Length: 234
Image (cartoon, rainbow, N blue to C red; front, side, top):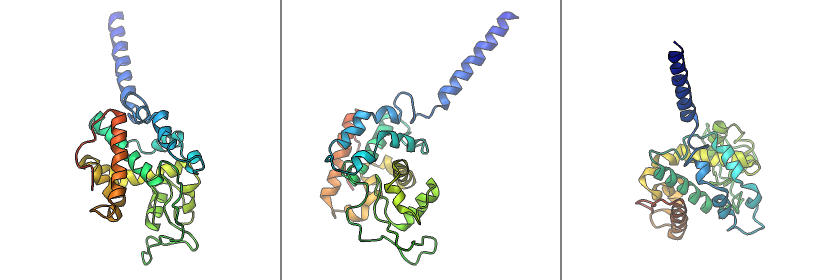
């Protein structure tokens, strides 16, 4: 009887251990998690390329990114470690380009309110501007309103929150990525460019901009020890 009880305890312990291992999100901790891949050296290596007087140097932090990541557990969780690394490389290549290596928190030109009129579901607040802000340069009243509803901030009346709260700022980037980009990552890096700024850059419109993104992506893939895959350009 004592031996049977011991066996039951052992089985219970093993089942509990397996459950705890499976319950830990792979992108939060554990081998090959996003936190393991996006090391302080990697993250700060991007920031260190920006001039010292850039607003983003103090605004964008790895801690803010990892904090925001808690709300998006599916980010960087592909069907293989290599594909996970490619997605992370693609994300950071695009935001490094959008922010010029974490230099800019807001768009340089602030004269355009980026308000699309005549859309009842996407109103614009008087005096508010919906120009690019954050790691992915969230733009347009529609995106601000949708992101605000998903994340929990007032995107309609307080779009400037994206340039003031670094965690919300990274959440908007991850929200946009998971909403519009995540599903096409397996089509190649070029597909991610198309989703983020395709109408302005792809099909030969801005080849230098596309090449800048591709260069960062291949560099990051190299740092992660993974091949970049096909279809790099859009």
